[in-house]
Length: 352
Image 1: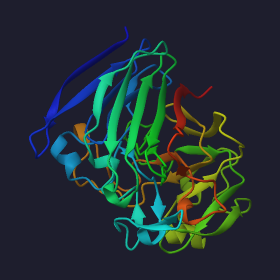
Image 2: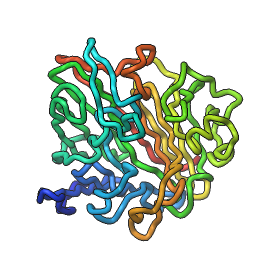
Image 3: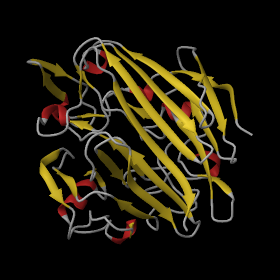
Image 4: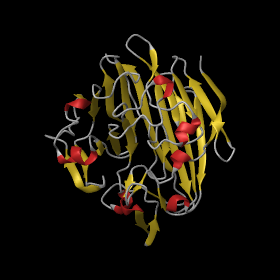
């Protein structure tokens, strides 16, 4: 039966209690979320034999999440991905951000992944759901405007994780929210190199040595970045292609074959041995595929599993990296009186 329960997960250094929510849908799928960082700590999915296993990386304790640098399972903002030189100009005003990735700003600096969200159960006909709320003050991490943010997680009875983002501002700003779960459909029994992936994108964004987009849209055809049909991830991950070398694997934004803000299938991930499959649908124009190139088991993985190199992959739906400095990219600007809204669905099934 559907249920949403909550319990105390831990206490952050200032003494505030952190709640963990457990959502269970009518099909038996289960997800656990903590208020710190909006982190998805557990997410189970059935294999071809109907056996449920956890398919996301994580840690066993709040203290480990506080000391983790990999954004495991977290909500990301104000700006997912990188902003070059940790700065941008908006309406003639220059804003300086936190440089936390060399000279660049990554995932908003000390952003939404490390703040305490306010969680509450949320009524939904689709399945058990919670809403996470956070107010980001004007100037936080260098970004302008007080941003009121809501992220709703719904675990539908059709085995979908539905994530709906909403935000408003009182001053011109930029917003690019995403979710940073690391998936491993084997249940963390092996690395992700035997997983198969398809991305509905004919182009991607080539990057420089600092992983900042270095030009326009690059065709995937004839490159290791061609996932237009199902392909095993490990096939080209050690390629001599300069873009693979820049990122030590895959860590790029694919430009989805879509127009406007319609909800559309963006990617399909499959693990042949377990039979698990995950479809990614989004209203966003891009998706960042990161193959876990720098993961280390520090802090340790949860329940005896290991967060080792390439033991998880991210499929982060988003606008493009460095968009505030690239007027040729889709805009991430949000003005007072407007409402930022995006939706992403991770749909779990078995290979037919």
